[in-house]
Image (cartoon, rainbow, N blue to C red):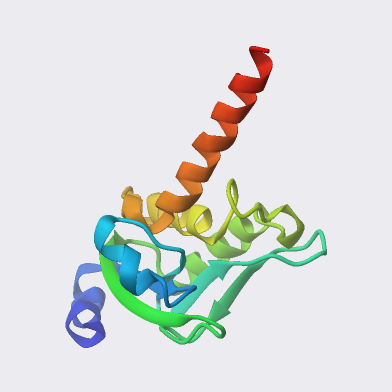
Length: 155
């Protein structure tokens, strides 16, 4: 996948943006077919992979790893999202600015997780969001919390 996509980057001035998806649990093998699962995701661009994780400090939770090798997760698949015109040096400045918006101590499993980060990054780079199934469980959880609050507020 990487060779064919990246081969034209120099000629077109555009660089591929790929979403790498990982399983957080083996249960995904049984529930993925119905559009559910618990996934970690990262965006691959310019030969590196970027994602967001939690820690206790008010510093960036954005991290960079080798593509398809995020520690602690089982690689599932890659999805071509689109292309970015950002040159590697421009991208480095861009990701550093974006990382300041994603502090590790602001990570929240339902409302600000790695998939929210990759969706934001993908949208900013390509104008296209990540597939909905990647973060579907968090979205369902968020809607459940809202419904509970509405229910409690009515009584």
